[in-house]
Length: 385
Image 1 (cartoon, one colour):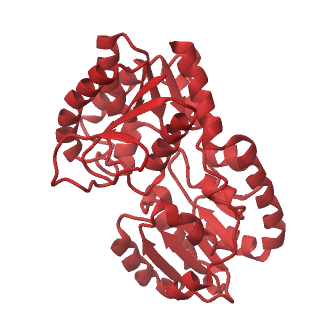
Image 2 (cartoon, one colour):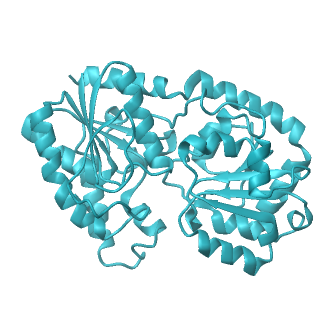
Image 3 (tube, helix red, strand yellow):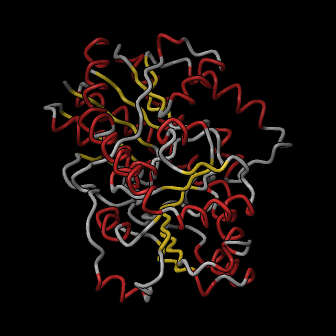
């Protein structure tokens, strides 16, 4: 089967949306399908994926999230999507992000092909989360109507969680068009391993003190501000734990915030970590934290944590509860004091939490691998064709 994927983003960069795109498409290829990806000129090549980009050689980086630059890039990307589709003659057009679904709908109508949409969250909610739009913006009602219109165009939507599936039905999408497709991970790549003593020394971490790890984007809606403020709250303020925060953007901003809060001596910021190196860094942790505040997005960082059998403290969101159940510490009150208490309690209860983390690792092996996700996609594609 030929699958044309459309991803209007600076693919590949080392964060969750791009990891999901790469994992899905590579797994489809491993099942024997031909895949072509059309994406922005920014980003790195992903080995093994046939990728097509508009020829803008000077544009190699993109900001994360909403950007005015995307309007220009979408105008370049749309004709390339059509050109690649006409040459490739796909059986299915598979879109990422709302802009991709809009382009895909136009090409799918022209070529009489089915369109599927990997739905990772609300477009307007992302714009608000990134503060690209304010709640008072006069453009917001129009963009929300456009967003809902786009969501009704594909034959099938693949939301990343049961929670987002519920949101879609509430927005008028037919339940028969919704096929939840959870985030996945490679359990062989993200497997429990011993700490790398050389990496520990290179980072300047003290091996005698507990290490809490975070891997993901740095932004307020990801809970980065919440986490740093929690470090200054009792009882965590007096705890000897070290915090290894891995990710981007705004690293300098959060370093400054840590200094203002007086916790910079306990926090190590690495900046972006290559995805291939993520298991080595995560293995340094005794405990992982997922303080995400957004209620409209998935939380792909949980899957590497779970796959590496790391004990987890997370905010109590519907998505986190869906993956973690009762096998992690969930913080119902998204305030620094509550997160501080939860982290301190988890650090004193690590032996019990490690047993529960092993069960989460087992859950990954049973239902959250890229191959399992690709088989679900394959079954839907075949039903459409």
